[in-house]
Image 1 (cartoon, rainbow, N blue to C red):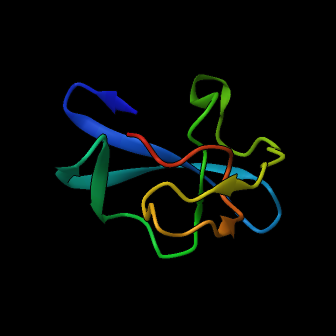
Image 2: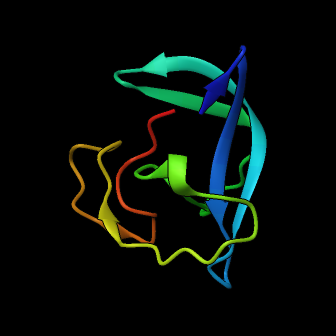
Length: 85
């Protein structure tokens, strides 16, 4: 999510609770932004329905297929779609 030049993502923790946090974006890779600060590998990011996500609410994530690596068909425990910020 971008608001006045500041970027945020909604992250789902191990207890399926949402936290909204600021991130620093880097370069654009295809149609996806590279996040250079604010996320750790393996964290689950909400990418569909982010306008409904609120801090502390329960969110039931859906697995998705990775689209960042076209030669792989691995499933991840992402929120629903590949990250598009």
